[in-house]
Length: 330
Image (cartoon, rainbow, N blue to C red; front, side, top):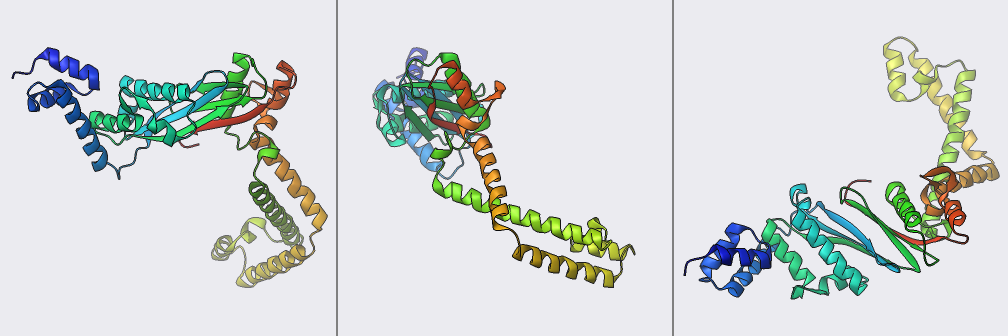
C-alpha cells in the first residue's frame, strides 16, 4: 500500500515525529496508523536506552502557580537546539500543567500521571525518539501555601516559586519576591530555617578565618617592626625571589621564617576567645543577611529587606517557602 501525505500528516499530528520517520513507519506497517505509532514509540525507547549514558545538561525549566499550589519542572535534553524548539517547550509546559492540576508532590508522581493515553514517563521516552537525544525530567519542586507565585526567566533555564502565609497576595508583590529568589539564590527563608549543621559549619569557618586573620595581623606587625619587606616575607616563593634578586640574604630569609613561626605560634595560643567569638558571630550574621530570603536586601529597593518590604505592602505578610531550579551554573 502506498504511503499518502494525508497519512503522514495524521501520524505526525499523533506523534510529533519527523516527516521521514513517519513515512518510514507507515511503509513498514503498510499504512497501519496505530502500528506505525507503536513503531515510533519503540524507536523512542531504543534511542533512550542507547543514549542512557549521555549527559543531558540542556533543557527547559518552567514554573506555574494556581493560587495555593505552585510547581517547577525541568525537562532536560542534550543540546540547546532541541531545548529551544517550540515543540520541546510545549511538551515541558504540557507536563507541568498536568503535574500542577494533579498537585503532584514528587518526580515519581509526575512520571506516573496519564497524559495523551500514556504515562508521562513513556511520553518523555517517546520524545527521545523524536529528537534523537537523551530526554529526562531532572527536577520537580512544588509548594502548597495560602498564596503562591511563580517566575520564569526569559531563557527558560531558570525558574522560582514562592509560598506566602496569607491569602490574596498581590501578583506584582509575589512576582517581585520570586524574582528575588531567582536572582539572589537564597539558601533558606530565614535564619530559623537554616539547618543547624549549616549554622555550625558556617560558624566554624568564621572562627577559623577570624583566628587566621588575627595571627596574620600580628605576624605582619612583627615583620614591619623588624624592618622586613612584607611582600618578600609573604611566602617561600617571594623569599626565594628576594634572594635571587639580591634583596635579602639567605640568613635574612631564615630570620624571617623563624620570626613568622614564633609570632604565629604565640599569637594563636593567646587569642582572646570572646573577641574571636564576637567577630565570628558577626561573620555568621553577614551570612544570614546574604543567604536568608527575608533578611536579604530587596533588589527593587536597597533600603528595605525582603521581610520589611512584605510587611510594608501587607501587614504580617511573610514568605514561608521557596524553590528554585537553574540549569546553568550559579
